[in-house]
Length: 282
Length: 282
Image (cartoon, rainbow over the protein chains, first blue to last red):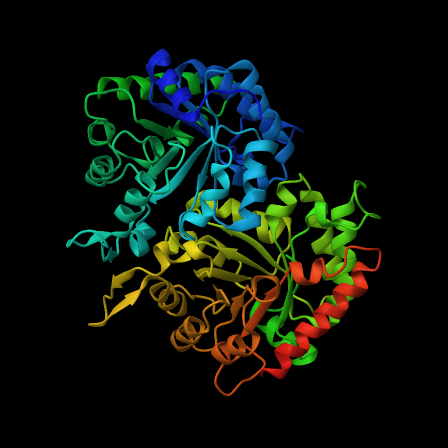
């Protein structure tokens, strides 16, 4: 592993020095690329690199979504993209959004994928198989592991919103609250866990914040997905520490702000507007 | 897509014509390869191809685990391996074990990865994000989608064994039972869903079988992981249709039966012994 600070330290440095809670999600869809890039070899890397270079001073993290690279057979471009971010923008942590969920020796292979092959600073994981699906990542003690907790898609409630019996209180709680409680206590061996909580339901972000203290929350769903920025920021704020504790992701609204040759400038303008809206809501 | 039968038809054909419920899991770990392959380019493909050719007449499915390829940057070898299986052993369906879990356009990319890039006949998925994380795969109406339900790792109970309130009965049920019920009813739009249920707790396999009728169950955990074959087969049998309904996986006990140059022969002998034990338990 490269010698990089603890994931949570990287975040705190970025929140402070960039004064930004914005994360730009790198979901490259070649069908949405400007004509100047369409059909060219290496277009995915070229597109993402332009977006990264145009926004790196505006963000607290970049979040490449691996599915967009895997569907195109572009793993090598993902490797090069993350290497580019580390070299050119070392102050910005990279969260590999892969939502892997497996156990034992298989999860170890996924940890190698995320932290050795791709050199990510953090990875997203799925908690359905329990702590065994978190533990193999914790061997990389400085890296972040961001656990799916509450997603704001319509079907997100199919399981996450079920009432479950609580072992240590008379009250019932919902499944996503149980995940938050586990992640904030016995699962968080290195202090480098975070949680994914969608932006659509601010009252649920507030509930998670209440459970997890100052744990970082990765919050997708603003921008193209329509989450309310002031309500989201209010709900997720760490008491006494405004401007920290949240990694608020926007992907399409920034990546595809324009589809002409000036797409990177347009992405920068969209990122500035979103960052400023997040700042104003502090 | 290649013109291949429905996933469930492929399974029924394989169960009948091969008289086998054995699935060989392809989890290639270069550290465990025989010396003759160690350190060679293309060793992952060469190893898996020998295993496949030595066992194809003994199995109802092959299950490559994508993490082992991804950690080594060997996606191209996985593509070639699946292509080899389709060409040389077209009677054997290929289940891509990737346990993807995402929604919307991201899940669409994972569906492209599984069904277009890798040409898998079925894929494993994680239900934590609800039906939205299943639906994008259903556009490939002939392909199988095998949903994680109950895993037999120690931490599997962290969430799956929680009691949840049941909307349509006065009784409580456990989370994995709710997943089974959803998968067997409103989620199963094409009739091509299956479930992953670990072999360690036969009474739970029996419970799932009771909920899901004749739905195929992918059962890892025999062989190296120690599941009891007679109890597993008894629990998972479809009433009135012995020899169907189960895809019983063994990986390491077959792949690494011997680490010398005769590894493929040893794998064949281990596969015969396991297949026969499964047959005897029918």
